Length: 152
Image (cartoon, rainbow, N blue to C red; front, side, top):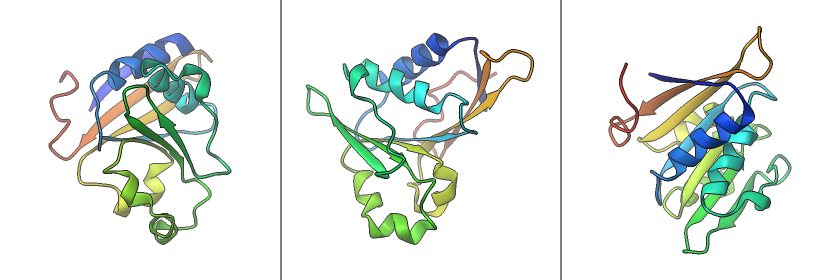
């Protein structure tokens, strides 16, 4: 597991931009963490890398927002918190998005059995002593991303 300490929103955004630069079509990033822990800032930074900084909106009520980059890359931002189970994810054709672009899935731990065999799981934790600090725990699931983060 790789750990990243973010000392500010701009740190989280920079981390996300850096990760975005390394990903491509069919890559999946799962974001876990309580409300206000930095998932949206991460997504903002991720989209910023693709020139979509002003496009972000929360998919809370729509389940998925679709973004298209100038070079034709599709980015899908899911919030599956309101889904009752994995079957509901399949019912909206959720797994079809995996092959068509980069997917960022908030609350993805709720649909674990629907996720592809390879993905990046980032858990966001707030720091009790400093409201600006976040601990990001990054796990690579499967083989595809195992060399993406430095081992410690």
